[in-house]
Structure formats: structure tokens, C-alpha cells
Image (cartoon, rainbow, N blue to C red; front, top):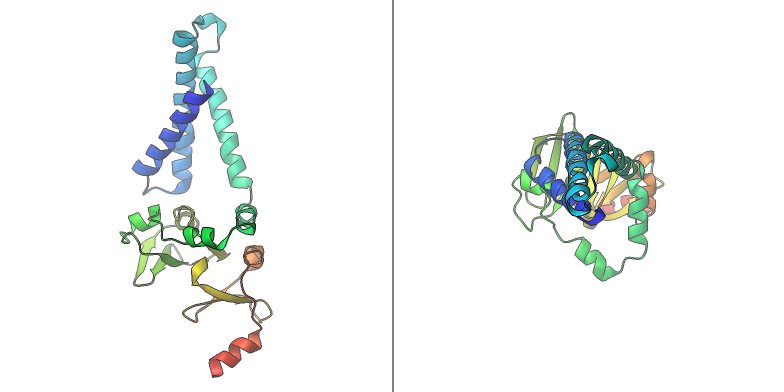
Length: 224
């Protein structure tokens, strides 16, 4: 029963992301949990009756099985939300070889790229929040769309980058170094742009293995 249930939930998740891609991540999650709970409860009920030959009186009702499925799926989703992303990122970054990093840095055609019609093979280098809109930058263009910053980052689908501020996400390959002892801590990008680092996301930067620069060295390079 567990095997078919996992397969069905996986398929429902893929269909949910495909058909509801334009909706926010919170709405997609609610729809996914509700549909998966009903479908899983019905599937288990069907298996118990028609495969394992139980009588309806000897097993929970279809509604009770759906409620149990709802509790399990909701618990899993809550754990995924509570578990700090920075901790997952730190674990995944510790023992990664240079070859693996190069694979991780390949421009994936994420949901966000598809939504903005960014051509396949073009890497998203930076996302910046501006009110109710976000600016999505590539090496060639800047795309502006109305959506939440958190939803935009979620729809990157694991592209290798860092959220350094509540309004800024940058691709790891776009970062040259970071400056921790400046008046305002920031990361320095390849295009010489400075992106601020907030205290909330400082651990992400500290554990990313970035080159550390002294503010004086940065100012000296600019003078030269």
C-alpha cells in the first residue's frame, strides 16, 4: 500500500506543479495536500477491499483514511517548511567537489525561467525584490514580473545560489567574494555590483566557502 501511495502522490505533485504553475506556492501546497489526502485515502480503501479482500466493516471508512492521509501529508509538508533551508544548503555544500559544483552551476530551465520565457541554457544570475514585483536578471536581459520574492526563489528549483537578503538572491557563480568588515556587509559580484547581506542570511554566506576581502582591498582595486 505504501508503494502505490508514494507513486500516486509523486504523480499528483508533478501534475500540481504543471497545471498550477502560475499560482503562488502556498496555494499550490494547499491544493496538493487536499487532493493527495483524498486520493490516497481512496486508493488505500480500494486496495484493502479489492486486493486484500477485507470487508468494509473490518477497516476504516474512506473518509477516515483520507483524514489520516491528510494528517501524514500535512506533517511532512510542515517539517519541510520548518527545517531551515540554510542548514540543508550547508550540509550539501560541505563535501562537494569542483566537478559536482560545475554540474550544480549549469543553467537549469526552472519553473521561473519557463514562466518568464527565458531561453533554455540562459542562467539566472540575480533576483531582486521591488515592492510587489521582482526583477530577474540574466547575463543578457532583465525580466520584471509581479510575484513574491519567496515564490520566485522557490521556483528556481534548486539552482545553485544564495539568498543574502530578504530582497536579494544571487547565483553562486556571480559572486566574486564577500566583505564582512565593511560598514554594511555585502557580497561583491563579477559586474562590480555590491549586494547587501542581512544578519538573517549571514550564516548562508559564511558557510558558502566564499573568498573574504578586506574593505580596504576593494577600495584599492577600484582606485587602480
